[in-house]
Image (cartoon, rainbow, N blue to C red; front, side, top):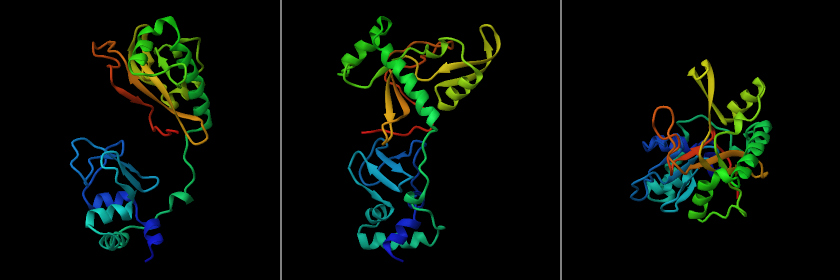
Length: 240
């Protein structure tokens, strides 16, 4: 079996399972190649690669085996052995490009522009102070602030609400609401500095929020504690 055949057939997940390594839901795990108190290795299932932000080791499934087995020769033998235990897989190049629907990109772009403008409003003084404290130049960087009010402006149609829920901008809650019972919505990353995450085409395909204060919700707990990180569901994109 040639190396290119092994690379095509062997997934990084198969290798990790063999070595009893299990990434979390964010595809992070403690690096097995150095002492690691917190998960610093990122697994990329789509490309069958890995990268450790701690020891800087990175590569594909074969290279992972080589590091675990102690040499390139032994690693290649192990990779070939593991190939016999899995079914052939399509290489990433043959897979259709997965990206959020175009309507989500349009929606996220529109919402982010409102966040960007919101950072300059008088009500966003604390957000600007936070940005300045963290050395963020809001005049030059693509950064905004989410006060959590963007979905209250005007009446939204059912179709608009569904689009925003699908994009993760609104989180539905079924239960008691101030005016009775029904569905109400929580805004994604309320009271957060917001950064756009883009794809190679420079389209906004996701958003990242960083909590700046500990406003409390109805349960008395902080709605978005300072320092907390918020990502849209099925997050993707980070360019450059």
